[in-house]
Length: 223
Image 1 (cartoon, rainbow, N blue to C red):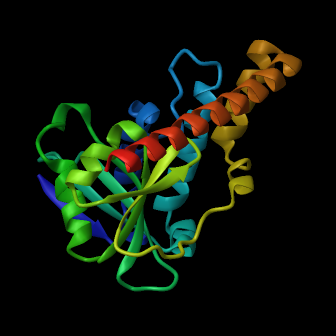
Image 2 (image 1 turned 90 degrees about the horizontal axis):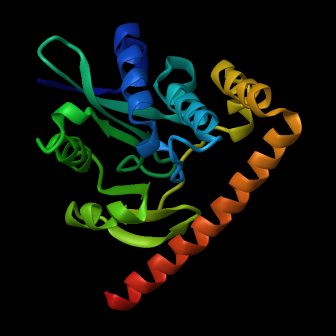
């Protein structure tokens, strides 16, 4: 196995980028910003949004604009088996925000995720991330503290809060994959029903957010 910290995304090979995107696609349900079951009508579109966001972070030009970097673990055949993307803070050279972390299912329970996060901790004193409630306990064991609800996820941090650059969500609409997934939804269900599905999805997100807020409140009371 080989672990790389890629500061300059122009050095990321196209084959490595393709590996990362394929790995993310296989594990897309874990990388979305809210739970979406594979049989949900919005799964394809939600997956496309996530992949478009990730692609911006690992593409040289847009990644540089966002101050993104990448930690990549490859196997003996130079195939990507785990990755972590993060954004450097605007206001501190020792702070960053973790964006995506993913490990191939075949290589889990081998400490690869901990290895990548420990590598990040060795270079940054202040680290922020968002995760699903089910992962809060795991990140606490890695030294993160639960802070507050962030829509369908939970904000967690080591150290202080800092400002990070974010890619405008509106620009993700320009992604060919997002456009294609949007068209597929409309073709499969019709435009009117597709709009209704989107509305239901938004309503579901609100309900999930309320549950996450309750989770954070209850956990803080216990702690």
